[in-house]
Length: 383
Ligand code: 3HC
Image (tube, rainbow, N blue to C red; front, side, top):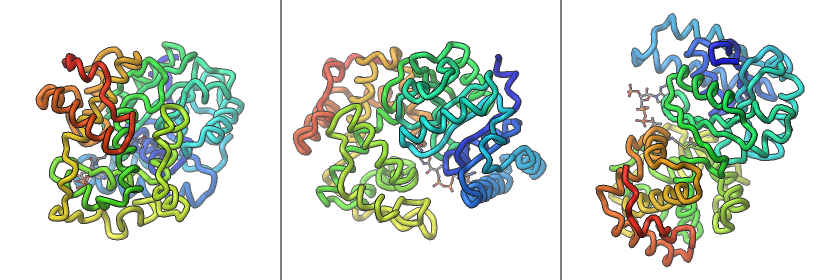
């Protein structure tokens, strides 16, 4: 099969990521079945797509006709068999629970045509393990989008242990047809590039939650001027359930230090999941929170966050997940709103300063994940 042979796409899951991916695919001209387990979830997904398309029309990014045509290509469904029986390419976007992913992939393997590629939008989890639930491991691949999928350019295309080169190539080509910036991740490793590089920041805010100080607003206020979305706000935006499952998974596969904080666990149990439920660390009932910059903490600054990113990025090089630092910078510049990668930033700040910041955080929180790597101390990575 070639990317041009892909005519029909199925997206499994109509939540934030699922409906965003479906919207990207219909706008790229594909027939798309979007499936969720209950009609109300499907309806909510369709509603979100309609609102987003209306925004694009309003901003003159697409025409009214293009919006109508795209919507006509969307097939919202609850019946899984109906959704996948004639699909050439299937993208799974269900919650980040390994057993659930495996059970979905087992069903997809049984119900979809033998030639269909089964892609997972998992944020962090092993593609190889998800593929093991199927009898077509060569056709299972990671295809990781970023929230909001309609705006964020990056797609990480992740090769599992048994994914064929043909599957990787088709997924790469389809990502380009979607208008995205795909990056191939050759080694299946937790969090791939983007989320792995940001994992220590999630750990840092988790530690701050438990310490109780600074407050989310005091912390975020320190970065408001230099980030499109600050760390606690971004966690709310992406979903505290997603943040919780990610940290839990990292604590199992990377380091026990990633164990999610008690505060985060309580929020998830109380269904305070951030934007999607109207409340997380902030109140989202009337849109993005107003963060008061006068409350900014002096305890942390942007070099702390950059230091953690650069340090984790060097681990990806040391572990052979990526062999070219430019690929890491390309991914990091396109996955969020930053527009620039960590190694480019390191060049202008200087490795010596960043190493000191990592040591400071490692000592302060007694966290070895923050400790600077050998590569970081050598300070020779250049892009
Ligand atoms: N559909 C269509 N257009 C949209 C939209 C949507 N859902 N949301 C926003 N827009 C448009 C707006 O109309 C606006 O257009 P304009 O520039 O022509 O005026 C533009 O996007 C900016 O939107 P807003 O003015 O409403 O809002 P902001 O300026 O606050 O930007 C944001 C919102 C683009 C989300 C910005 O805050 C941002 O870049 N945030 C960072 C997001 C990020 O880091 N994502 C990665 C998260 S990690 C992840 O996803 C990994 C996964 O595994 C969990």
